Length: 204
Image (cartoon, rainbow, N blue to C red; front, top):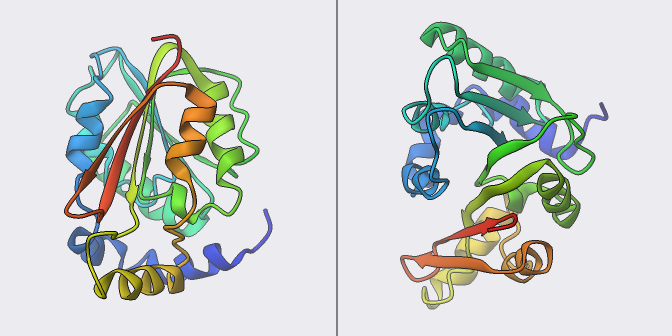
């Protein structure tokens, strides 16, 4: 797998991620709730990082009937996730290092989550389409990510610039593309456009 700028970024941040991201990554438990999981749901998180969101997903799943697949481009982040999975004894979690834009796991999922990951993927439309291809009929996809800070006044450009320096691009038309791929999409914004939660479905 090619060594990209984002992979190099996370080679360092993998070691500080868990201790720092709670300050900025808001709304993750609510995003998981929007997936409307059942005990036997098959779930995939795209851009799972160190597995910070796994506990929010697994509290909805039966240990033997439900399953969670974490996908990430960064091997360094996945190694941290593997330590978390092993340490918690989660037997129904598997981890896959893969490019979200070319993902082909050969199986479908009842629920797919992007939590603060889509804005870091350069070819994000391709990632959405690969996710749609993996979503089972009647399944649900949720994207939680930074929005445009439209109501933040002069602080808006400051936040967008800071995030761009951290490989996060907030100004792309994510909501429009989601509607192109999935049709009807429910989008909610929080704190003046700090983040958005988009809920889409397949055949629902």
